[in-house]
Image (cartoon, rainbow, N blue to C red; front, side, top):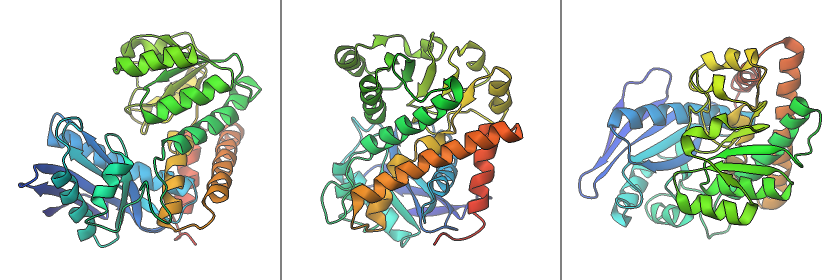
Length: 348
């Protein structure tokens, strides 16, 4: 079922296959320096296995940085399943993936990500104890999406103070790209904060919901990055901030829930040249893994522990943006340096 691949810079990368259930996918363990690798399980209809492998490699490395930025005693890992969750997901397939996770004997803990739900995690839990994001149980954390959105909103307010002189989002126009679970919760929070919303998603129902609930204005997905807005919030796939889109971005602040928002390192300096403030994604979107970590670490007092950690995320974002301004560095470079300092020792 597991075939280990030779991948430099990773502690373990495995191809997963189970012919009986039709399972094909990958598990990547990037680092366990600070603790067991933790990161979600994603299911997407990748065009090719190479695309799935590239995704799991990027996402697992991102989880190492995200968990360190949140100062959690966890390393970074990720898993992906190749297939359309609306058509190809089955109990047999999920249980097969659970057996693959169990075979790693605790090096990797999984939870839900794109295309997955707490109910799906419950199926995996029939085959492995190394699963979180469950809907029931003594330490069950459930859907991490609301907590992810809360973390993004808090970090956006911090970044807004740096970009606009005030953390108050009242009257600010925010372009939300992606209205999945996290994007919709973020839109709800922004609406409560008094922001004006422009939204885009390939899911017409989600767009209609946002228009009805939040008085949002809808645009085509390919146009959302370039609309007249104060803040651009990528909340779907990565790489939407790239050499092609940056010249078209009119927002002065980028802060969203998507992973790997910058297509490469080249975008960092181009954003600086255009005076666009970038709030590092793996800091802003750390709320979900904090929520999951409470389950993995069996925290008895979940709510205050999670709230305190979200507050520390905001402090970390403020520290990064202050240091970037003081040292004339990009926020992404400062964030990477801060995380790399934390990766030199195992977390307490």
